[in-house]
Length: 209
Image (cartoon, rainbow, N blue to C red; front, side, top):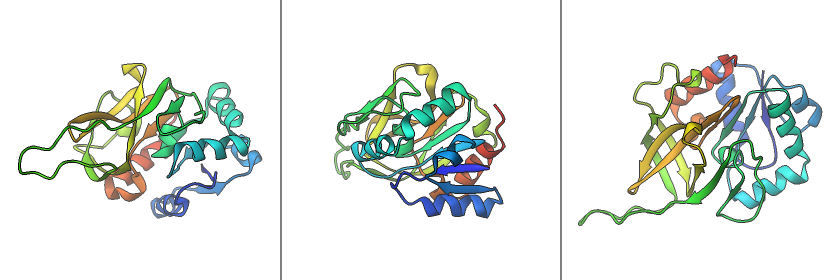
């Protein structure tokens, strides 16, 4: 069972529908008792870091999620803003992340485009290739993967060992995925990434750390 955390940010239905399409049992909830007994957790999110972090704090989820991961070892997958919330903070604005991985979210510093080409802009939106920075069970069967991104900030890890996936945009190489222990984050949207996203979500569901 995948427990998808509803903290009132983002299009949660598309993630739930993807699991149903895959035949994987999943539920969407904001109830502490459901989260406390979850086998696996998924933290989604779209929007402003401060507002998302504020919702997590106001709903009393920060300490609950930290206990689930740090004390119980429950696997947690953060998607898009959910990945950024795994770190400590963000340049986007005030707010406290979950602090599960030593990292901060920073805005893209893009390089000018080549002469005659349209200069890159933020947000980074669309399909992009990613490359594995290290081996991990959630990457099983993913060869030359492409995923769908929509973001203006990316997660800068304090330790290179926490980087799972890398990509580049506008002359900036950025971390597209992070992992430490039972915590995983991906900056892209697997629920919008067709067969690549389906493979990654299936791998997460099957993962037994």
